[in-house]
Length: 273
Image 1 (cartoon, rainbow, N blue to C red):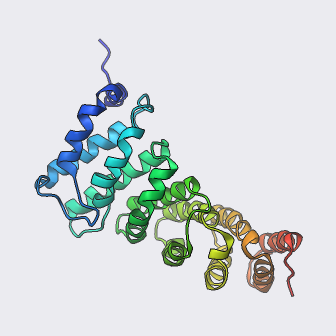
Image 2 (cartoon, helix red, strand yellow; image 1 turned 60 degrees about the horizontal axis):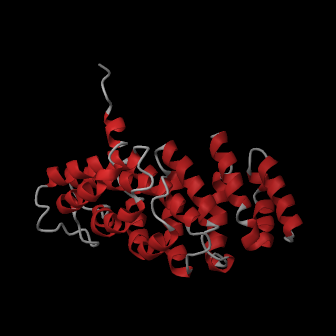
């Protein structure tokens, strides 16, 4: 007899989510502030429920069933459990909650209205989690932010742009290369997540300075990713990109990327001095 894997079982759970999701919510519920609800007094049980939820969300075959459950999962379970709290168990709970959030986004279970409604609550939490001491959590947060930005192009206002960009820049110096790769992808989507005017001025000025420093990274993969990131800055302020790229040319070991950026910015309407 063939042994059935847990993912196969999870893939058959769709018709039963009406009964499963309330049980998970009951035992993993958190307020948006991160304060555990009275019913969820057992942290280990809470963690087990989140692990089951992540398995269910990751399993193929349930696509049509999840969207109707997404609002309650976000509001009652995931947002609050992603809030940073001290302690080993809290760290694991947070990591699994972020993994659930990533799976929900990756599989497209949250539509634009749901994400737009939850964004003001979840973005400050993810910003804090970018500094999590677990590298895999930081990586998942970067990827989750990327997916949110891609799902809501042009939807962010000035305030979240101002609040997020310093924390994203810090991850370019992360001790984990996987996090650095991930935040480069995040930045590509970030520059498309708000109107160009939201980035102009101090945000784009300081961000370009940092991106151009890292464009001379010893890792060719990081260089290639940042080249793509800076290309997304050109529609925001092409003259500034051309000027700053030209200014760092002599400091880079190879002028290949900066020369191409100057050319592209000039073609878009910028002009290096």
